Amino acid sequence: MTMQLNTITPHTQGKGRSRLCMLFTALLAFTPLAHAFDLQQLSEQLARPHVIHGDFIQEKHLRALPKPLTSTGTFVLAKDHGLLWQLKSPLQQDYRITALGIARREGTQWQMLPGKSAGAEQNRLFLAVLQGDSSGLQRDFDLQLHGQADHWSLTLTPRSLLLKQVFNHIDIQGGKLVQRIELHETQGDSTLLKMLNSVSDQPLSEAEQHDFAQ
Image (cartoon, rainbow, N blue to C red):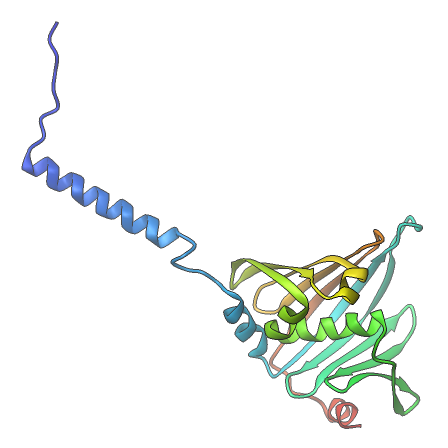
């Protein structure tokens, strides 16, 4: 029997080292550590636009109902002011969410609402998420981020006692802007919020400036 041996020469050694270097470089290029997308980068990305206009569809999934309760409307997020949340159907109602609290439009005036309800906490959460306020979210949630700048997902697990009584966890997805928020409640209900047609190249109108100023 004749045994054939692979002879290693300096030339083949050099080629082997070259291949190993190329393989190592390729692995580095695709390792998550080389292109990590972290919470700080996400916060900066979401906080970059000064004004965002868009539409929303909100689906409230209740265990007792076979179909979700669906509402639609528009929103305006202004970096230096807050959030205008304008329900169009099944009823018309406008809300304004700012650092001072939550107000509801009553005729031509805005009426401040109680600030300690679960609904108020949920609206403040929306504002923090849309503005990319990760430091604010981290006070009340453990955050787990996956993905890259153009396609990411963020899971929020509540820390505070009040939020633990309301939510199991919250899932957020997006790209340049937030596209989807899903709230999973402790009692088995859930809310899905889809942000559609979002644009960040339109300034506030005079009417929107007036609403924020009141």
